[in-house]
Length: 200
Image 1 (cartoon, helix red, strand yellow):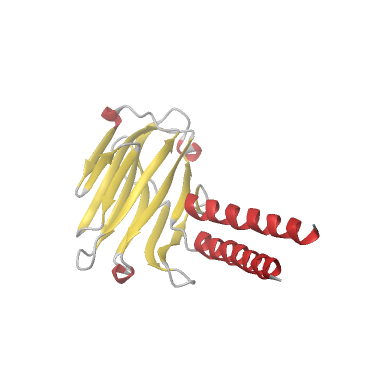
Image 2 (cartoon, rainbow, N blue to C red):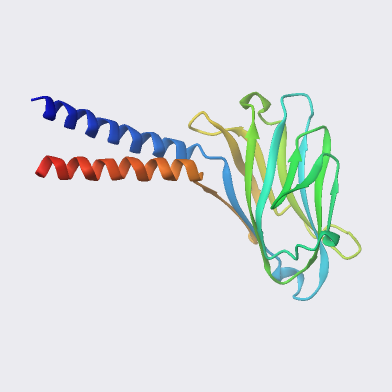
């Protein structure tokens, strides 16, 4: 009898872990961002401007760029302005008043991608927008913004970012945070063990 009770508790716990991980994955605030610069002409040089702007009147929000792919990581190709700085593996930008930029001297024609994550208070809603712009070698804007993500409450009530503007040559896909994925795997593994014990 006690064994059946323990098995029932074990199965319930496994199910709760799996469901909890699923909701956590949806609440994740990490995005895979990619920009295809082929439209600007292969071999042409210019700039990609990554901007995190805010009103500076609420709690701080941090945008972190990591796992940069397609970039020439020579520090001479990067410039930071405002409250933006290099960190191991990428850059951090804060939502202070005005514009905080990571400026990259690019050779166009390829795809540039990175992971983008946000951290901060939900009360900083709509005070912060992460944007990407392309500029030519004379630092003139090439069209409008390629991407705009505004920090706000997600439909599940968790703070995150929702794309406001995504150009055809840019993409931002929300990905589960590693912790949520590990939790989901643990929950599914426990469900499998519980099912095996039930058959035995």
